Image 1 (cartoon, rainbow, N blue to C red):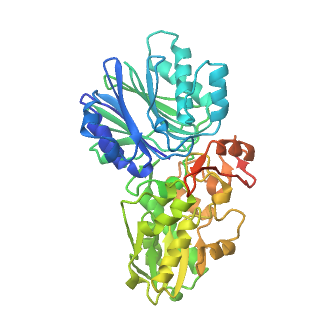
Image 2 (cartoon, helix red, strand yellow):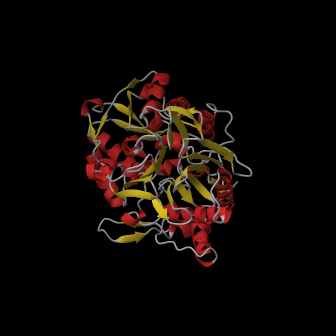
Image 3 (cartoon, rainbow, N blue to C red):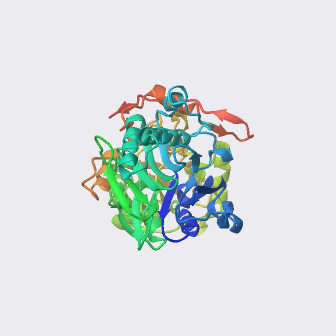
Amino acid sequence: MCGILGVVSQAPVNQLIYDGLLLLQHRGQDAAGIATHQGQKFFMHKAKGMVKDVFRTRNMRALPGHVGLGQVRYPTAGNAFSDEEAQPFYVNAPFGLVLVHNGNLTNAAELKAELFSIDHRHINTESDSEVLLNVLAHELEKTTRGLPLAPADVFAAVRGVHRRVRGSYAVVALIAGHGLLAFRDPFGIRPLCLGRQGSTWVVASESVALEGTGHQFERDLLPGEAVFIDLQGRLHAAQCAEQPRLMPCIFEYVYLARPDSMLDGISVYQARLNLGQTLAQRVISTVPPNEIDVVIPIPESSRPSATQLAHLLGIAYREGFVKNRYVGRTFIMPGQGVRKKSVRQKLNVIASEFKGRNVLLVDDSIVRGTTSREIVQMARDAGARKVYLASAAPPVRFPNVYGIDMPTSDELVAYNRTVEQVREVIGCDALIYQDVEGMKRAIGALNPALAGFDASCFDGVYITGDVTPESIARMNEQRVETDEDGDNDHSRLNLPNAQTA
């Protein structure tokens, strides 16, 4: 998961891109980068760190131009600790291309081999985004053959990308001297939307980046669709996939996206309210409401679900945890040891809300279980009599291969365990999960036009149809984590039977 943004304007775009990336910071905190174009030259600055730390005044002054793009990075493939892996990526032919990518390619290794042996292109990092850039460059070169570039040529190149590339990808690219290209994979797994204000066009991962910078949301890009905005601000659009189906990642609504965003016609906030409503029915069947004194959310994405659940059960809703906003997400920290140590740095309890009470904690999801176990213990240490835990999402039982950092089964607390076994690991008095079909109904009801969802981490169905236990194992070989003593540790994989659709 990353946040990407592209701008075409008649005014300098560096500040606008910076402001947009701040609004997408929740989508990636590992690295940030901006590239702009002026005359015949690209200007780029990228580095590890958050947006406010990567860009100083001198860096912004060195990013002139009226067209540009940017990314905030959350690593799921490649070397998470190398500055070379930060985006954007650049290649000088044809024309000169700069690209940012949100998603994860499932056939990156095969493409990399093809690029070297057949297309005679060299990949210098372990990033699948650099692979994607070179596939696009090769297809564009085949299409144009040195002729002047037309929008039809750009769309023909994207069709070639769709034929070769598998996985999830939302892409923004600059073509030197011509304009800005944006496209989504044929399933629309990762989000991408289009906005406008006057002569300025913006494409971004989430609508909040449009509205927060004063732009009017126009629409979501369709699955498989490409838009090309030339340097004069003219918009061209075409469907470039043969059989597109809108099946966005359901985890965007559960956890990843900001609640004030609209993704593919669905309010993220309303989706989380709906999850709370269906979760309330599950709670009633597990724990009598009269045995619960208070409902407490685990900040922050669980708040809408917890609010709705408390309302429907007629139980008091209270804030029991205070979040330190200056500690990084435990979800994207590099090692289990670091992740575990950070929980109590990240959250502090309001003891008066726990002492002598039976509390129902509500979380958006439970992935590894480390954080949940620590939080349950914090509630007990604060004096809670009983601690119940409800998850607005179903058990996460399968690796995710489409751009979320949970690719190995042995890291998932629910893998090969019953709910009761997970409860024992976490240490709560009762554990209530959302069910998969209930989750799909709750969110899907908000946009009946959706063909379905990618819910692979919950149901094991990989919608691109090319994912097998063997292919996940190969992808996992590229994934390096750092353990507590700082050594690199290749995670080992034990897979359930993956399904394809």
